[in-house]
Length: 357
Image 1 (cartoon, rainbow, N blue to C red):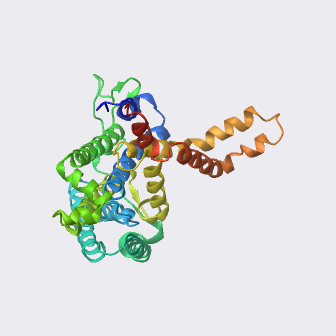
Image 2 (image 1 turned 135 degrees about the vertical axis):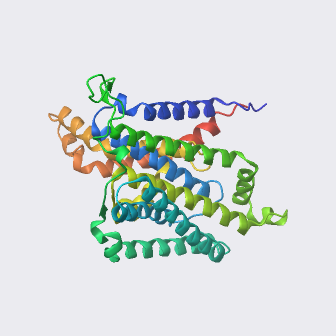
Image 3 (image 1 turned 135 degrees about the horizontal axis):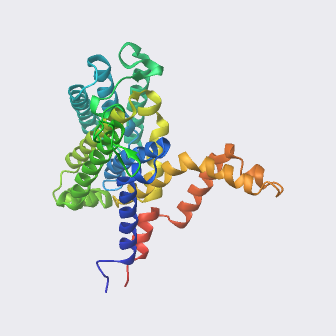
């Protein structure tokens, strides 16, 4: 008999719970600026990758336009914060503008293109993303061009803001962490990301999630039993675009800079794809694991290799192989090994192997 609670799924959920706890207490556990930056990036990319998993993992839609929607949200907030000054009004209006533009483009792409075969749809989304990147680079009077836009975040998130003060009027410290605007900015990112992820988790657990899986497994059969496949695929494409746009707005508020490389680069799309594959498609827990592992590797693998190279400095050849400049090579090796040993991603493979007959 197959148990509903398997060892594999329990292990995956425990891993996700540990990641969530580490992110929740990140400013207190890792008090250097770089670590908090890494934690905030993980939060953003968990949402971004999970929204992409709605497409590729739950509906079988391959899109290369996800960073375009992410960029719309980021540029919407960035442009208004630059023009109107720091405040919540520009953030809300910019976020809504990013959502509106994302919805218009998503509906247009969905209705015109989702009827075609997968490879042609992927090429159409790639072309749309390329156009957005070119426009962001050329409309320098609005987007700052290649230099991007630098602006100020709302006053609540400024380092000089005092969230808690002691009897002397100085910024209070809790566990050695100053209770200022920087900590408020991090928890804004964490809370916003957690809410968006919870909404997506609820979506895939609803009857709609079951329909999406049916469309992924057998589109013709789903249409034969009465489901309007194009309407469902367009709807989920729009939902995914909206979530990606909101993630872009949150990232723009945190980073206080938006440019083509940080919001619209095709490198970001590659990262999203790698995170989905590493974590596991169609699980929703996979994006949490994949985003965490890849972001940590991008920030710390180089440092780890430097330490390893020094440790084996007396051994022939090894120091050269472990040269920090070769970190991308070793990242590629690690990715190949992960795909080989976890063909359905870490979460997908663990949950599949954990089922007891």
